[in-house]
Image 1: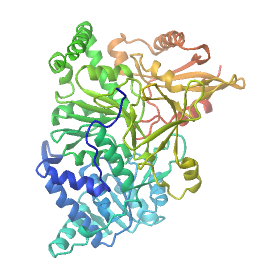
Image 2: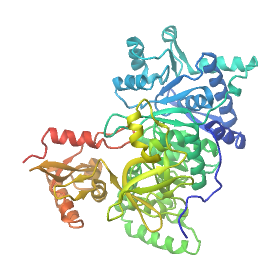
Image 3: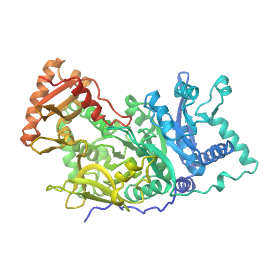
Image 4: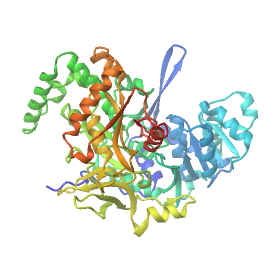
Amino acid sequence: MKPHSKLYNKTNYADIREVVQDGIRKYPNNIAFTIKNKVGKDVEYKNITYKELEEEISNLGAGLLKLGLKDKKIAIIGPNTYEWALSYISILYGVGVVVPLDKGLPNQEIEDSVIRGDAEVLIFDKKYIDVIKDIKEKNNSKIKNYICMQDIDEKLNNDGIKTISEIKELGKKEIEKGNREFFNLEINNEKASVIIFTSGTTSQSKAVMLSHKNIASDINSMNAAEKLLPSDVNMQMLPFHHTFSSTGIILMLNNGVKNVFCDGLRYIQSNMKEYKVSVFVCVPLILEAMHKRVMAEVRKQGKEKSVNFAKKLSRFLLRFKIDVRKKLFKQILDNFGGNMRFVVSGAAAIDKTVAEDFNAWGILTIQGYGLTETSPVVCAENAKFIRYGSVGVPLEDITIEIDNPDEKGIGEFIIKGPNVMLGYYKNEEATKEALAGGWYHTGDLGYKDKDGYLFITGRKKNVIVLKNGKNVFPEELEELVDKLPYVAESLVFGYPKDDDLMVSVKIVYDENYVKSNMNNISEEELKEKAWNDIKELNQSVPKYKHMKKIILTKEPMIKTTTAKVKRFEEIKQIVDNKLLDD
């Protein structure tokens, strides 16, 4: 059977308001969000049902309209919180255009993004109060309204900063007086409603314009491919300013899922247990780190053979539709809270072994692929069709072709569909280049196998082109290096030497793993071991791909807030500092 993405009934929503409202209509008494608050030494949990969420959206939306903010560009900045999600959704009910900002940007870049996005309103988390004061004082932007997500002291109130709770109260009074403006808002689903900045790993970020139609169509396609249950608990991990996350929360709310927030990277597994999490959307780095910890414990307890035997037994029984994975791997599954059933990994390629193991343990783990410019997901594996190493098959209504393939069938992915962006805000030249010929040109290189599964080999901009004309895809080598147990992350790059490029690798080692499993080996000894391991890996690839120099460090690489390595910043530092010169 040919793989396809339509396993379930496809929805046909025209805009984001329809998506959220249908979830509220179907699951009014389900919990939409659980919010954890620390009160002194105690912890309190507040549940917000879908019905209550509907009232909160209406109150906030009506309050924003009362302030005269119809059709304004409204920027949002802050960590993942209920208030962030509430603001985002309320604005998209027809109030205005939302401009999500990267919470990890330096202060100056936050101000630059506000200016570049032409934002006239800024909704912010209290943690950013100093940045806000600075922007307010400089007065270089178009911002006229500042709204804090949390309550603030009187002095800030007197400075003209409002709060979400104030605006909700204002909207509530308007609705009680019979003001129906918010409920009668019209949505043009083809106009730009979200201006969202790309992660900018290689150059200055571009401002992507997405419409209601773009995002709603992508949700329709995802609903056809993946099954979310109204009994699911989703832990929102990826930052909301990232399309994978902001579109994701809308998808979750459409399906009646309960949404909770992670306390931070160190607390992922404890939060999974705390909230009985069943659904998790993440980047491979997080999943691979969790897998490493579990496997290190398995080896420490001397249970590697029994786990491998259990995997073989489980695979055999599954042929007869007998699923005993929950019993066989209970101890492992308890590491993830015991309720985990579905993991979606995106933003980069996941190690095949990691995906295979999670599926073997009974946690459906799929790989997806998408871009900010495509709202974001364009293809994915699903419960029925998984091919390790691939990113699955194109979603319903989305066409992906391989442009200008070479003799191996590798070319650039180009995409067409209702999910493809309107263009880049105030950047006609980049828009024309990206949308040439009516297709979105991704810059990602890959191929389709005979069954239609898509495989990514690398980024067009990342390819190391050697003097002899050979192309080296760094991602292919990084996948091999990352399998070494002591490697936390790696970067393969071309280092300038004698008018050519020398294939080299930077390795960040896992300090905890080395301390626990390598008898306090010195860094010099570790470097020697790493070099020997690299020489061994070189034997598995053609000679022109051989890595000839290494850098070893425990310092993490420079990353975006979505955990993507800023490859060209890293390479620039290495070259500028002549770290590999003899």
